[in-house]
Image (cartoon, rainbow, N blue to C red):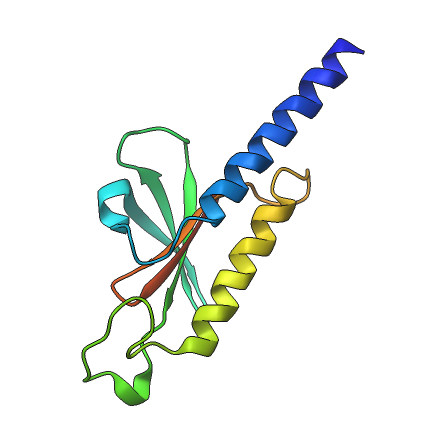
Length: 129
């Protein structure tokens, strides 16, 4: 069935793109050069979720989970986005969650993964809204 074949190719392409973005090294990009935060959608004990869009207007409506990775016990110290001054357990947890989301991205019951990275002591996980 040609239509089914097209759907499979589109799903595989989307997953490959999501996995490639998930594999991008953290700490090498500036969130605010690529995305614009909009309204606050919700907040929990672990993160704040915002509506967002790409600065270039592509990808439509997005949601961004923002997690503060700065270690509260070391908040006055200087830090970099690779280790110093960050809560490494929280960093691993957020990046693991984003990687797993990328793996199932495209399933009908799961929001589509777009991006993830760390900048300025904050982790960002970007999904479709």
